[in-house]
Amino acid sequence: MPAHVWQKSSHCAQGESCLHVAATAETVHLTESSDLTRAILSTHPDTFATFLRALKKNHN
Image (tube, rainbow, N blue to C red; front, side):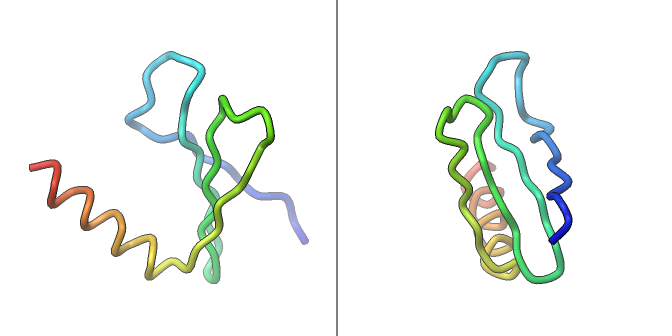
């Protein structure tokens, strides 16, 4: 399996705690840079898209 290509959130400030996302056609992986356990949350792209829509809707 190839290594994940991680992208840092564009909403991340200059601090230590940033959300990082790596996506494939089948899975979206999320991790936080300040998490010393390097835990990864994985979800289906459709589920992640629904989550992002809800965040954007509630942010306005």
